[in-house]
Amino acid sequence: MSDNPHTLPNLDAIIDEGEQHHHSTAKEEIVGCPEENMLLELASMHPIEYDKIRKETAKKMGVQVKTLDSEVKSIRETFDDDTESIFETLEPWPEEVEISDLLSEIKSIVESFVVLQDGAPIALPLWIAGAYVYEPLRIFPKLMVVSPEKRCGKTTLLEVIEAVLPRPVMASNISSAVIYRMVELHRPTLLLDELDTFLPNNPELHGIINSGHTKKGASILRCDGDDNEPKRFSTWSPMVLAGIKLAGDTIIDRSVVIQLRRKTKGEAVQTTPVNLTDQCLVLRRKLLRWAEENAHTIADKIEKDRTSVLPDIGNDRALDNWTPLATIAELAGGDWVKDCATAFEKLTPKDEGEAIGAMLLEDIRKTFEVTGRDKIHSAELVRELCCMEERPWPEWKKGREMTVRSLAILLKSYGIKSKQIRIDDVNKNGLEIEQFADAFERYLS
Image 1 (tube, rainbow, N blue to C red):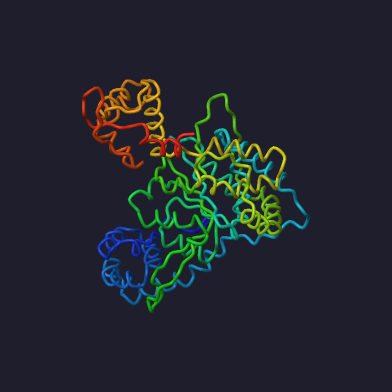
Image 2: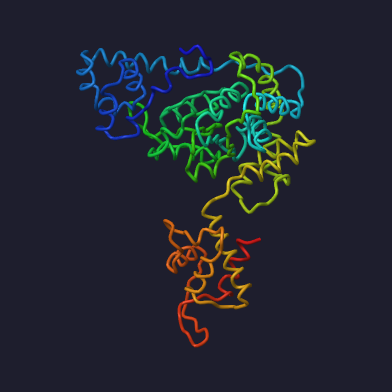
């Protein structure tokens, strides 16, 4: 057991390659592992995968197969008890509490230890409060913490928010099997650090993280047990995802994103105390008291009357993600309402594909307006676009100008296709302004 009651013992070592890869891959992962880690990995494997490699592994370890079976069985029997013991037994605060006071206290705590971008000191307390009331909600977003470089306070921020979150489990590496088994059994708040080191090229883990965005879809099916019967595992649990230069449009699309920045010499923060978790015990109890009294109220309010706090920025997924946070802000009242709206606009990441498409449509509309034409040949349109300074078209692909073909590919997603057009006795492929009417209305405000 770890000395830290909020860290899963040896979680980093429990990488269930048996459920993620084929037999050969599992063999490669087992060979060369330290003996204790090897036993933990074997214990976390699906029984079928374990059975495939038990004889070879026992031989490499220099033990009898029955000895290895006994050790693995013993670890499996104690694993559930060990993981349950990492969670504190939290008693709700005995008196009524005001959510506005709790949010302000969380805000003060995170600002004391980490330099944050504009909007983040508002989003973090609202998301943390949401982690206490997520269970009856239809949608609850991930919290993504992105650091552009090392030493920007990513791990510090995780340590700080871990101290105020419900049932936190922090890990710097985790397998998909551990996630869905932990969530099914214990409903923790998972804090996954160093995600950039183990998420890429792991489509199963990527899919499991994505699956936990909506309550209805937050489950996966796996064959389980000695009889290999299909079983449904829940993935409905709050998750904090942290890493350097994280990518993955589908996860970003399901997240409230916090971009960290390295502090300057003139920006001072406090050193995180070793006993911060103990210092925040009363705050956690108060949050639990508030959650027990308000979780279903928040869910009902979202269901019946979607919040009007958030401005419409043309991104329905972002509105879904922020609706629980905005609803909590409404309950808090005061400046939290307008501050939440401001944070929403500042922190909602721009979809690069949509941004480029909208930019292209805007520049095409401008070209029609400047030339005073209602139709233009494709080659001429491309020349006009490539003359626009501080736009991507002059260096569209590897430093080269956009081509007619590149333009056609971009416009295809909007249902716009060039056709033969006669202009000044010249008949070439071109476009008419009326072809853009629907796209202009839908994608340009």
